[in-house]
Amino acid sequence: MALFAVIYRYADQPEVIAEHRPAHRDFIVSLLEGGGLIASGRTEGGSGDSALLLFEAESAASIEAHLDRDPFWSLGVIDQREIVQWHLSSGSIGADPHGH
Image (cartoon, rainbow, N blue to C red; front, side, top):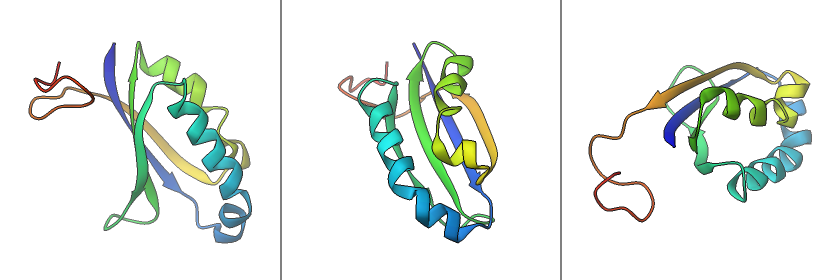
């Protein structure tokens, strides 16, 4: 299994986002419970509204298949979605204090 970082960049559609946020958050919780999601949250200080999601998965394609079901993706409020493999070099994720 590998680690992947996903960046969501949101469209300027605050009404649509607010209306569908509960369904989006329910979807995110489902990924925590069985979709390989380790953590997620919004980001600040960049160019517009965005979020970072961290996954453990076999491939970027498997993550993409999960994220295609995100209500925000279906509604078009995610302008950009970037999935990159992340190589942990310091610190730890989960129970392994050596970062493996």
